[in-house]
Length: 449
Ligand SMILES: Nc1ncnc2c1ncn2[C@@H]1O[C@H](COP(=O)(O)OP(=O)(O)O)[C@@H](O)[C@H]1O
Ligand SMILES: [Mg+2]
Ligand SMILES: [Zn+2]
Image (cartoon, rainbow, N blue to C red; front, side):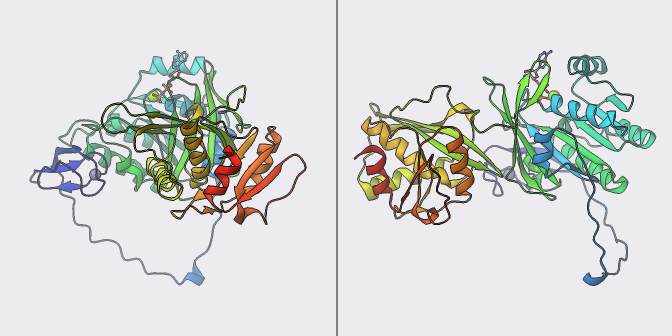
């Protein structure tokens, strides 16, 4: 086999014969690294006759519950037997803790679990197990990075569950690149995938998210796996969120909420108010928004700070929201309502480190920005919901009633919602509901402008 070098994008795996500054596939800069091109054998393939759809039998895919409700919810009701799952997150977020905890529960129920770690020694893992109160005769540890020793252990042990912590540490000595390189990660993940499918076991691989560079990002693996789950959290806070971004066996809009404690991860099933400040005050720039994550409503505070620009180009800093979405809202406010942000720095933030992934937050973002610009607090005990169109019109959003219900439960008195949602909204005596059709009308109601 003749080895040739090839340049590979460490983010998405795109290959090129030449080094490129920017990846044409994923658009990232400086991600190309030189690797060895492995020639794959040409496979003639088996002869499998296609079946008529009427002859295909359906089987309900069995699921194993991990009994961690927040985790099962994100997976769509437990682990589908035979699935290959990627858990990605920044170092220190709690990936090992989560999967060791799950290994403990599953093995306690009599299922054989193999936990492979290339990150820690056996005794380090044992110490962690003691701290997390995990102990089971069916939980096996293998501290190794060698893909062949993993293979041998799998063949000998025949586990039902396999955890690989982390995919970036797995190494195949026959591939002439370093652990964590694109080729290593791809080939080793491929081996684990094939084993998972052949033996119908359930496999979790942990992937570290790192800064661009020599280590292959989990993006590379996303198309290969059945389920991609991101484990997110801020270092300052002990709140952790699990989010499925791909799921062949379930929805991708459910989140799981945890808090990282000394004794391990604690579930937070009642998370609707977890991101809210303890004392809800009415302040300029602070606007409340009920965000919908699957079946669950999470109420957050959107905060803006608009200050005059003194040097050069005005700054725009956005955290917890889509930057482009916030830019769109500012553009509509400028063009349609004549608010001028061009000589101001704009900071927009979601309280508590929550990430909003829907467009229903457009309206609260707009109100927050104008409220800070004019230094006028929004009306008291009010939540705002609505998508903003380029015309300045307020568009309806999904699941209006579950949002309103949760806001009422937490003591909010007024909801300003899209006119288009009024018909379906259920009237309650605790909550005054106002429908708005245009952003302009909403601003005059909210800020008396
Ligand atoms: N000995 C310990 N005592 C208390 N908390 C710990 C200990 N070790 C780790 N942790 C907590 O667990 C977190 C790391 O979790 P871990 O599962 O190792 O993360 P990851 O595998 O994602 O890198 C730390 O940020 C810390 O909060
Ligand atoms: Mg770890
Ligand atoms: Zn790329």
